[in-house]
Every structure is written in structure tokens, then in C-alpha cells.
Length: 93
Image: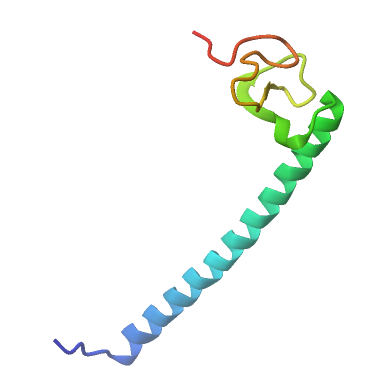
């Protein structure tokens, strides 16, 4: 089936695709910035805790003893289930 395009609808479609393309590029760039910030954040947090950045995982529970306000756990497989700072478990009821 052949589609008929009039100038106005083709122009609008092209403009919308350009906008999507621009947003996709911006999203990719922001994703890269977020990844860099997270790596830097974990590196600094690891230094504070005397651990490597790959040795820690930031949780979702609030932690009054944490410099970032969130519980931090060991990333080691079979590692500690308690926050390295406050000692609370990762799974709470």
C-alpha cells in the first residue's frame, strides 16, 4: 500500500523524529554522566569505609550513621547482610 504524504504532515513527522533523536542523544549523555557520578560516589564512599568501590552496595533504607543517609552493605557474595554503618539488616519487616 503506497502512502500519500502531503508536505505538512511529512514536515511534522520529520520534526518529531528530529526531536526524538535529540532527546535520545541527551538521554545517553545524561546516562553517561550519571554512571560517572555513581562511580565517583562509590569510590569516595569506599575510601570513607576503607573498602573498594566494588566491595560496597548502597541500599534504600535510611541510615542515621551514614554520611549519605542510606545504609551501605558489603557487595561480597554471601557477605554481610547488615549495614556496615548502623548494623541494621538489609531485609526489614
